[in-house]
Length: 392
Image (cartoon, rainbow, N blue to C red; front, side, top):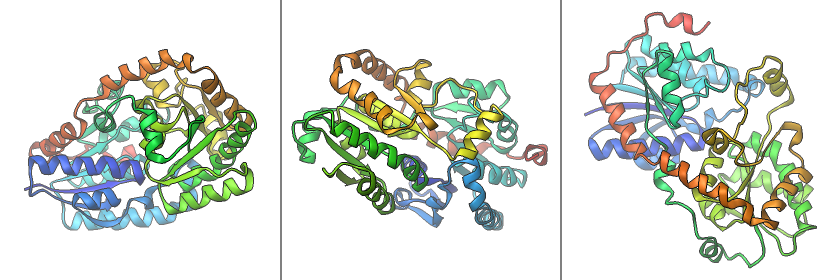
């Protein structure tokens, strides 16, 4: 019987970890899980030590405010794990937190798996040496990541993406609209992010884009799936302050249904862009961090890629329009959305490419992840040769 400690950050990590837990239990029903967990992990049978939303911090300077709290949390978790070591530790995403913890645990002889490769191929390449010292294995969701890591001497495995297994393919917009009670006019789904910080930065321009569109597209409707009570409340305040009089349909969850119903999705960057691609809907993508974080990115040339949205990264071409920082304004986003509404025929090539990428990512990812984690738990030999150097 394997005992696995698992720490996941925020909503997307909670979902990935829950899939892993269910897949491990399909192989080894008496496996035990505990750690930092969200609601889906708890529902899958993980004993929660703390809530995964405690790790939902975005941006370099944004983290500084929470740094003392995060350090206390890491020290508490490290002490607890070392008192009663598991067969394997799995860190799911949250790389700035989990990799440091994995480094310390592996140096103490605990086997470690990091689930979701950090974007070292895109920015902060110095983290490669941390990965090499911290992880017995890195599980990669994207096809180009494993080859990159292996070139740097890191044990890595491409397992595909669980969402590609869960989402069947291009959805039926008519059925989705009927299920949500939407009318016959154009439908725009708005996804301002899963973190409060994202909603604070993207909510106002997204709502201003809705107002811009309302004045130009007759009968347009907006549907907004939210991930929590707090993000819903914040977005509703944004709409009251910046939006049109007509109210949107705001949902608790049901993101895939909202995407399926939409003619176009206006979304924050991140996992949501992959979900929209897998559902098979056109999208406009926006990304904003604090001004200080962006200045650091640009000044130190930390970013190493031409694109930031996952569909464009996977295709290595500009498939979907993406807007960064000062480009994220209501009129700019609104015009991009309206372009898809008024000329839907331009989406055909994009949607064909989405389907091709979907096929590449569909690999029974949770089952592959479970097999890999159990292999490390049963046969791996942990221990970094010089973990201290990786933290420098």
